[in-house]
Length: 60
Image (cartoon, rainbow, N blue to C red; front, side):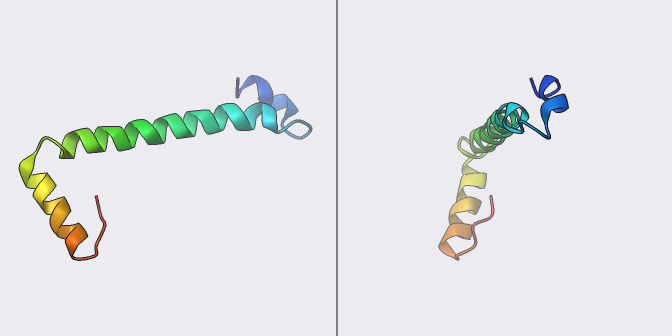
């Protein structure tokens, strides 16, 4: 869809914008989900995350 909308980018930008936004949001949500799935079952990683949050640093 994004490749087909490329020729209309100057006149109808939304033809490529919405599919591109959907790809970005899907990639971001899957990345965050996989990061959570890596941290959640590991008690050491979970403890480190809790320590960072209690110190005011939020770095996952």
